[in-house]
Length: 519
Image (cartoon, rainbow, N blue to C red; front, side):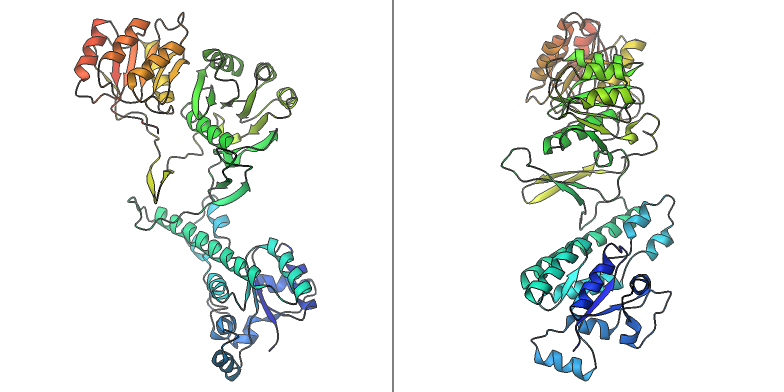
């Protein structure tokens, strides 16, 4: 039997060179459609698949390779005498190499306003069948889905006379990863189109590796960065790095936290994050003032932190940012002068992410995303925490908040939902003063937030709590510090105690009806 390779690819990268290499080693090339046309235009002799099957393509190309003379040629076990005898009786030639990548379903559904019909037509049927057949029979068939593997295959044929079993098996595993991801993407698309709201009985996820990381949270842990195949334009995977070292595992995790928080604001804001917790957040009329307010709210913790903003960074702000050690700055754009200033710090990672600009924040949303938490032997899945309040906020004290207090309360509420629980936050003038994150006791978080606040500024400040007060001790501590308004979910069996403590101290308190734990 003649050595044959079947080639049908949507990605034509290096396919002509690969096919010519195979011909040089005595292979016949079988192909169809656009791949055949590309090969023939470049001087590669091709056998059309219809010459093998004796059956023409039909149904607008939906049926081309779904035929026994194709699949028997792939699936026959070469060491099985009965298999080979049947091939000879049926006049079927083996297919020894299968090179296929699938219809561009991902690229199709990423197009704006793509129709369901167009998406459906780009679901490959014959391709996955051939790939799975070849991968199943990996001992005898070399199967390739990635152009990066062409060189390895040609090298082994050249140097060893054939592709080794070791490489064939690795390529087989790669195929099942490829087809599983392809099917998972289709399943996810179809669920959304069908408007199925309940969680699936079988959860299959697909993500694409961007690159390997030097290490994970700690140097002894391996790590890699993966992305959702269908990105939103707002996430870190869409950012362009303009300066600095490659991102680390912790850089990515912390920057994602900054972007999640930044998303809450529909006005110019600067977010500073350290170890996945905000350490300074401020709103102002320009980038310089917003940065300085965020910096001054905690000039210690911001050292080695991350800055994210939803507006362009100018030279004046950049000059201030350059005065301290920062790991990352991410903004929708930079002036030429600002970028020149920041680029003088060779290790500072400067990222451009256009999707976080105020102009685009409502165009690209993350509202449909799910939140995943890995646990031993399982996975927790939940809706992402995108809401702020449950309906209308409720004033529960004798005194309601002033207009300025209400602005600060809502600003603080947006921020505290992104602080690790138990979380308490003190703010004033649309700026954080003190943050108490991740305490096992709410009073400890309250003490920490008050302690970190500027004692001269805390008078007249507001306080936010990510969950209800189990006792009135937090209110009493806040009152003693000079806090004049509080926002919290409410819902404790002792809410009346906290309300009474507020009334006794002239504090306005509002309930949101929605808790924001973040673990």
